[in-house]
Image 1 (cartoon, rainbow, N blue to C red):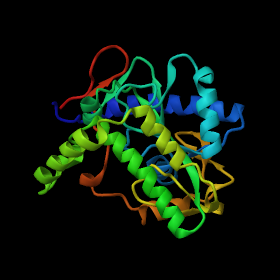
Image 2: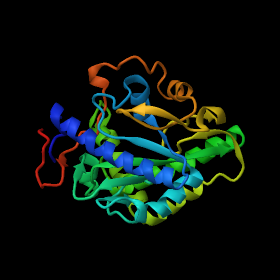
Image 3: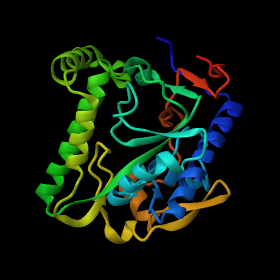
Image 4: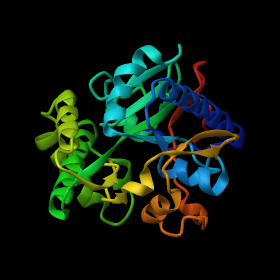
Length: 285
């Protein structure tokens, strides 16, 4: 297996421009169809701290309330402009994520996990469901636990040695455990079944007053008035929707989010292959 990429600045800027184009298309569909979405995760952080991409970031994350998320899944395949397509675990071979992605067709953005899973991933935007948690602490924790369990099983179904296993002193132990879990527990599941189980888990039946992204490993609870109604926020010279109170969301997620992390903690997806559609891998190892 190749080692992860090191971006040249011109390559990163080109990648960000393609991702921004995908975001613009999603934004237009949501506006045309009265769907709520908002910038999330590192993209929201970038909007607040940098008014655009975090300088080293190589993806965009958005979230949609549960009902809007599934309406988007229904509408988008016919509404996306030519050259973009909707991808989910039940229509894309090797896709480990149980949330949704929008790809730029003909491109490739293949990291180590995609490589292992056999997923020919394109340059993408992540589209996450965002849910009201079940009412009550115990019910909310149980709901989140189930969602994370199904997402973890999907990951293990496709991958026997996740990238992070190679880091740290316990790599050998974790590597062995992951291989066993991959072969014995996760591999027999069908991706479409895992997706259905995940989507059942996140379908809240007795909603409380807190929201979360059920795909996050950590349970982060955000109050109603921090999320809705979504409001516009500047990002790369244009305006996109964000949660009502980004400060509450970012503090809960990152703590002191205005402080820049040390260079060694600046995370990217570090692809092995980045191809803008001309068949040329532009990253260097």
